[in-house]
Length: 205
Image: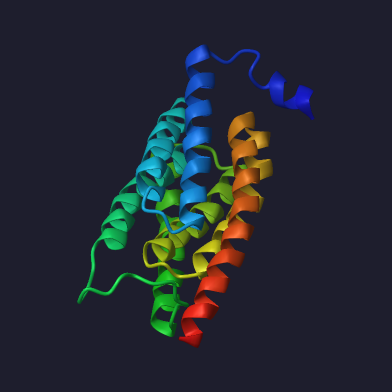
């Protein structure tokens, strides 16, 4: 396991390893902050996604690159939503209603179509890992939108997407990102449990 992880970096530059490390650290901090409903989820997340955009561009994984660019934009939106107040009432953890579920489904399909078109734009030959990438892109973007609205379903989507991403990044030789998504999976499960407790407590008020 360790040999497999280290072998992927034999020919990697010091810059790539350093950037992956920073993306790894800030990504973990971001998810931990999200678990705690801490606003630092967004600035730390922005650092991680910006670095990841560069790394994926260098590796020619344009679908993932585009999605991380979208994540950066959505992080700015979420940052605004979490800090703004409507009628002096803070944004609370809630479940999605039918309308939000429909919008989430629309965002999922829209994102998969856009990601597919990005691959086609770069004349990339699509293989099974690319189709998996397209699918997870739809999941992650919808999860980002739900997180910005503090919908508990965001964690369900993160868990599904993270589980898929772990072997995908390992296959692509991005071991540190693969390990990062494994940790993301664990944190997402813990975050779901914590948010569920808060939601149930709010419902009893």
